[in-house]
Every structure is written in structure tokens, then in C-alpha cells.
Length: 404
Image (cartoon, rainbow, N blue to C red; front, side, top):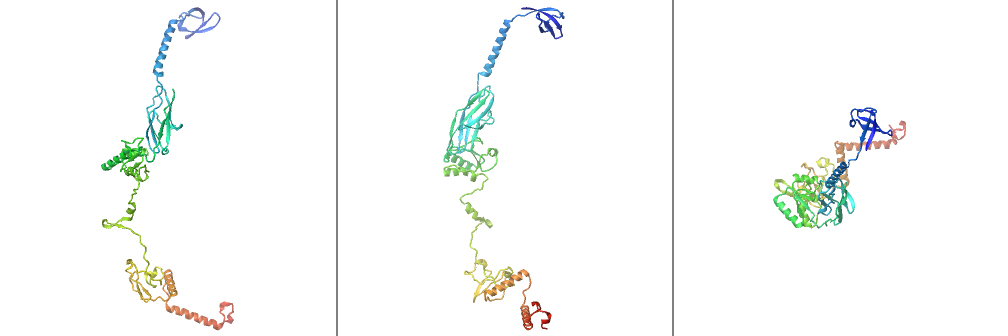
């Protein structure tokens, strides 16, 4: 097809061409002859290149086939789930590495009894998970759901039943530092109860048994919150025929055994001997002598006329007691001899006790007999004067009425 066009405006990059029906066409200047100018007429021949179209279409289809064979032949595979270990209250699940083909991962979720339990963190590197806090002797179903850019894929459902309290086959033990004899006994006990021992701390390790809290495996067990117990825990489980709590068997727990109470009653004595502490009834207190000068009276204790019905024990051999004619005689704590003083009546004992208390509180000497006599005589004289005079100045009478 031949087309004649008139050159309008010539520019360095684009030339404006005019059609016979006055339409404008922008045409690259580099494709036009170099000697054209405004008003020149150029002929342009336009034709279809079928051979080029066939070659381009063939190249495009080859590219599509390569893309399909590289990225569209494989698709993600459903996860393969299985149970690795089960105990009374936990289940350990594992699955094969995820096959995504050319798709991108969106999420990997775990479902329990048909309900979503949560997403698996780092599903491309983690292939196991542990579910704790389950009920004893209960059946559960688990399955995985893989979501990718190529679609959603679900695994098969796995039914798992937790163990009974008497089923010890789910116990998985990792050993730490143990003496050779203790290790041999532990291995034999584990075989008898149907448990197993694994090398290294793993996700399915239920207990870490050791006698010393040190080592790389011990630190890893603490990081994973695995109970660290003594070998006695396995022996106790075998003896009771059921799984036991680990509170009393922790490595840092106080050991309590059958002889613990007897050990509490045993106390180390001198020269490597042990003495047994016993509780005996307190012996009766010996009677105190009525004295105002001895240390017993200074302690503020009153005298008692009641005599003990039993002889004094050996501890009080230093304070001998004598009974002669109803009088009680005792020695003071400082071994000072006191003269005998007979107890006549309870009233007199009370008066003596009051005098001793007054002396201890006021810290003043006891008034003598002469002072008491002077006080009595002075009281008698005042009484005689009142009888003679009738009224005293303090009873409302005047000074003139007072007898001089």
C-alpha cells in the first residue's frame, strides 16, 4: 500500500506529515530522507510481514512451555502428620518436611478435635510440636492445614489417646551425671516399667534424671522446662505401679524418707555421739522459804504453805528439803544459811509477802519494830486528846472551843 504525505513541520526528532484529508501524523525524522523540507511530498509503502509474525508467535509459545515446565508441573503436597510420643497429659506430634513446590507459604495451622489450636511457628524449619495440659485417658484427633499461594492442603487426621496413670510406657528419660552403679539400676528399672532412655534432651523428653545440677544437657533441660529429678523417682513409680508427681523428687527438693522423723529426734552430741531429745514432765517447784533477805525473796515470789506430795527430783539435790514438825526448811541459791522461821497462819504469810514486794519496788529498808511502836504510841496520844477536847480544829469548830 502506497501512501503520499505532505511534509508540514520538520523538527529534529519528529516531523509532522499531512494526509490528503488534512490529518496530522507524527513521524520520526530519522526515517525520512535528509533533504526534505516543509511542503515536500513523500511516499510511504505499508505492507504486512507475515513471516515475521509466524516467527514471533513461535518464540512466544516456546517461552510459555518453558515457564509451564519449570513452575507449573509440581504443586504443594499435603502434610504427613503422625504421633511421636504420648503421656498422661501431653502428646508430641511430628510431620515430614513441607513440600511447597513453586508456591509460597502462607501459614501452617494445627487443629485439635476439629478446632484450630494455633499456628506452627517457623513451619519450614520446625517439624515437631508438643501439646500439654491434656486430660488423662482421653482420645484426641489432630490434623494440619497448609495454606499456600497455590491453594490449601490438609493432612490426614491422627487419633491419639493419652495414657492411664498406670501406663508408664510414655516416660522418656534423659540421664545426666550418675554414678555407674546408680546408672545400671536406673536402666534396669526403666526397662521393667516399659519406659525408654534417649540420648540428649529432645522435645519428647519427659524427665531429666541426675544427681548433680550441672552440664550442658542439664542447662538445656532447664530451658525447656523439663522436670529434673533424682533416680529415686523411677524407683518410686515402679514400686507404686503408677506415675507419681515429681515435687518431692526434684533435684533441689528436701529429701523426706521413712526415717526422717527419727532423724529429726536425733541430735549430734559431743565426741561423735548422738543424743536423743525426749520431752518429760516438768518437776514440781520446791517450796520457797519465807525470808526478806535471800535471793528468792528478791525475785518477788511469795511463800507457800503447800508441801510437795513427791520428793524433789535429782536436779534439785543442791536444795535439800526437810520436814520436821510441819516446818519446811530450804537452802537459798547462794548457799546462805537462814534461821528457822515457823509458818503460823496464811494471813501472816500474806503480810510477809507484801512486805517483801514493798521492799523490792521502793528499795528502802524495812521499818523497824521501834518505829512501829512510836507510830502506835503517837496514835494513842492523838486519840486521848480527841477524847478530852471533844472536837478537833478540822471538824468545823472555832479556835475558842479547842481545849488548851
